[in-house]
Image: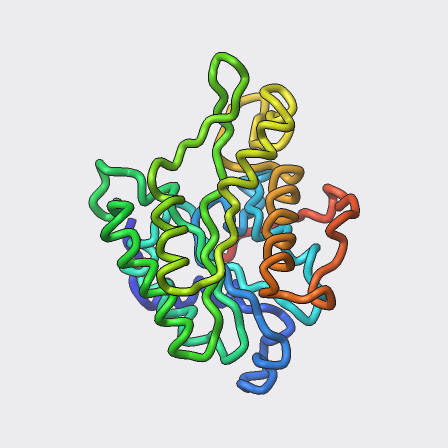
Length: 264
């Protein structure tokens, strides 16, 4: 269902980091170097009615120091196109400040060829929409970062983890090189992680419950594992420094994940 721009703006209030709430100054925003996330359900904030489903954006703050707040604007079901068309990128660009980061992860819903509201073609419209995020962040003095989409849980008959995103990761890699944008190759890293874990162990990382066998969305262990990959890549690529990250080699207790009540 399409939302009005006003509804999008109201919904975005919940994504504003608490450290910045009420300051209203560019100076405070720059001091805290906020990390914004634009993405889909695999990264999004989940609420009590969806537990134990967990987006990796919910776990990312556990790996960043408290003066590197996360403003998670990822939303279920969005593609690079529909996120823009609904005004969600505009909301981020109204808030983002010089020195901030914008991490962009889309592909899961861009792949849906039967849905013209979301579908993009990897080597044309997908790249065109991603450029809007890149150019928008840069025009405001912020740093864009592209992240290939985390992989689904899919194995072949021989137990090999199988990629599911077609040409989208390759198209993002090519665009990152062309535009000189830092790339976090979460697709490749997550595929390798699922391969190491294997068919049965990966079930513990996805939203498998007594009533649902979900091979796309994560439970707390899965969200924590993917957030660890993201934080590690932010450090490896020098987007963040050692002083910005923490707990990369530590166990994160699952009870740290909480699901607030959705706003009325």
